[in-house]
Image (cartoon, rainbow, N blue to C red; front, side, top):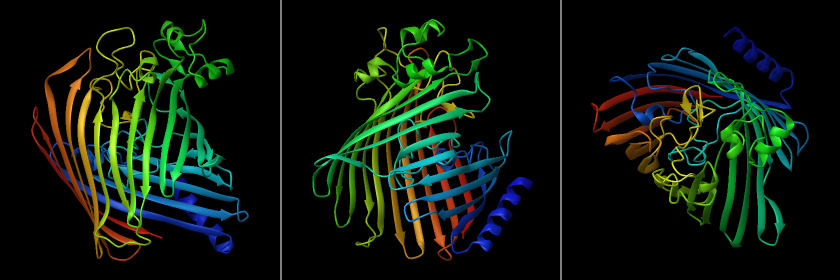
Length: 438
């Protein structure tokens, strides 16, 4: 706590000394929740680790300092901390990063919260593998500042990152390699088609069960190209790719009009060769998303989203490459999680429930000083191929959020949530918070 307030004082002092070159902004939030047994699903899910299912009181503070080195070279320092009960570590960092950008690349060193590409309406904030359900991973991320034109109407977008999983897990200090490549085709004015691939891999670290995992440069090359490991790797990693590989293919069509942007998209997951060969089709997220262009159009409707999600196939029940059990791994048995929270698709519960089917909608509306969000999901949970849930668990997750703007920087927020479950009692919860930005 003392270090945090010293950081705030230091940044404020810098602003006073250099008001012409450094801009300081931030925000404070304080809220409370009342619920039966646990908070409803959408009142805590995809909160970046800020809220958990047993949180009664929560607060956070964020501060950012922006410095323009030149017109095309910029720096940003971000500090964020939050407190919430219901966890063994109630007080933790949120954002803690240094960000640099120029006309070609962006680079982030540290931990920066996952950006939300769907106005808070989607099942995920970003993608099938990166939902914003866990706190931001510490590491280094380098990406293109904007898509790079390569020929005619074609451009590419790319990024590479390296993270460390520094939480309490079966494989201590496991690393995460991440890269992505998108090809964008602007085949007509305001029409674009994007096809891409994003790859993650957990590797290195010291397993309490399997011992030290390969971590030298040769191992990194194997991880980068998703190749099988050498003699020092486990038997499974010699048969498949080194480490715990996972990722997704992306296909999206975007149409821009005077009223807003319309998107059709699909995120197709893979964890081994069968997934990359699409043997697990139609698994993934299938969605439609509309967002208002409020610079040229006025409407009560600000955003609308429909999604169908399935992880039922997993390349089939039988065969050497079947039964993928998404986000699980034999060596990295903590799975695709950070501090116990799944990093990817939040409907998956590692390791017991990886086969789900869901229908989801989200709606954002605004009227006067009010902005409201409505979300609803119907989820069928089947367990895994090895341990089925019988009878199938059926759940409905409903939530609504209402924000009243006392001013441009001062907001009162009310959250309501309700969960129906055919195997347990229903859950209702309510939350209220106050936010101020500066």
